[in-house]
Image 1: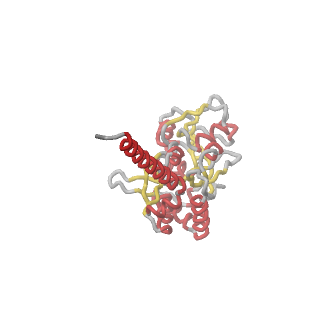
Image 2: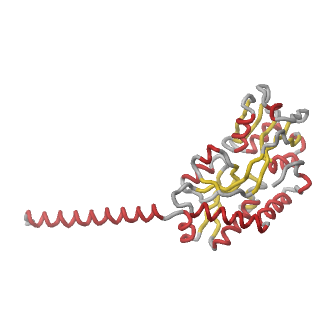
Image 3: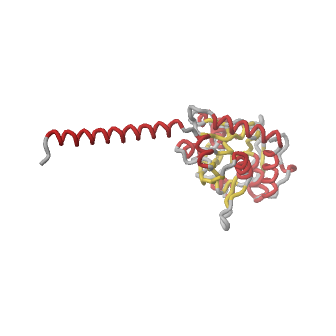
Length: 282
């Protein structure tokens, strides 16, 4: 027969056990909270990088082999090698990359042009390279100034949530900005005559027209809008990961690694330095 004293003892033991479990849980949570991204990458020996499957020359996935390629794959591979960790590619989109960073699905995403809205919620690394926004204008349409595009009658296609989207909306507030889920859909809209131009950064624009001259002509509207291509990382109190990635990027630019990766990626899509529009540098 269990006495009140025995019951109290059992309840006391249970309370102690529950308290111990609660303290252990809180301690584990505290440890998890204090482990920053940089420490997790080094301890897990795994660097998770976001990539877009149809983002050539930046990133692409071969449908037949499943192998990834592109300039940012080369850059990410070099970064992982210098950290002595394994690179893990996580498929995403340009529009979803910020959300995937925030949700802790990826540790870094290259190819993210700096915009104020993104900078409110994620941290940017130092500049990977400079870029310039251009438009692919339909045949017969040759705007020379951004003002020529800022017209209610003009339709401009963009991939939603991208820098192409943000910049076009800011520079051409009067134009009709037609948003699509992907870069390919935005290009298809131009090819089918549903829009007058596509807002895109020069690498993608030059490649698209060289592959399909019927799209129109790559034009660098004046004044030329210059942006930077950066990487984004999760915003956290400890900035070690952001600072290390920035230092590594600066180091790699100085060594010519970044330029080599870009030039190699252009060659993979049959582009040369001569195909770069006048005035555009990287």
